[in-house]
Length: 272
Image 1: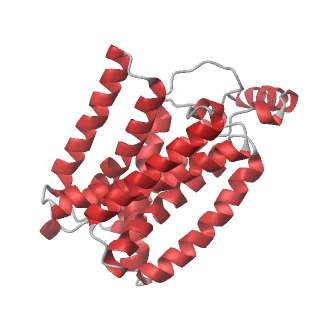
Image 2: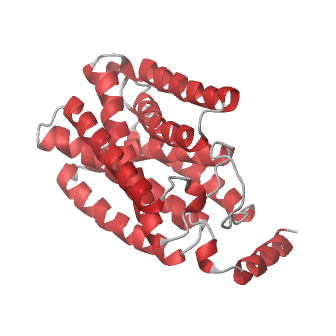
């Protein structure tokens, strides 16, 4: 059955013009689940490489940025959504986004509040330029390399911003990991409620939820991995990272067998 489904999908893709096929996934429940897993792993994996492996922030940042560049080049080469390639890029950009903020804080002494303001402005400017150039911010219309470039730049800024906001609230403001996670979980729930109950614009709701899942994931990762002295469960960064990596791999395999291409003009709600 799975083989026949795969053959039919291959036939459909072969018949479609490449520029009519969306390059990012449909937004479903498994999308949000794997996205949360990816941002959580990004937080713990960055800490593991820089601290536990003793590579330091600078070396870790150079290595992971080089790997990310390779993954992004591979992603652009697909010119359509391929689950394994796309989510590899997401996990890596999550790690690099964390490292960007950590470098600003630890190596350059930039306060987390300043990083939060900077990445918020950078994100808004990117959205403005994307909207002005392409006329839409919908992820249902990532059919060209230029739109995809805007998309990945936004993703990078959301991850860097989310790390700064999460650390700012949990550490600087002293709310702790659990309370911080609950705060952002409640914000995401409120956004979803506003979308489904009060018809909040789908594109706006999607990007707001996308931004706030990052600090939610960062808080979850820190809570699971950090020692009890710091308010965590003490599972450690390696075990936490491997746990979430296993979940990500499982969901990617599931997505690979259940992928339905999204072509230009096909309907869909951004949060569904």
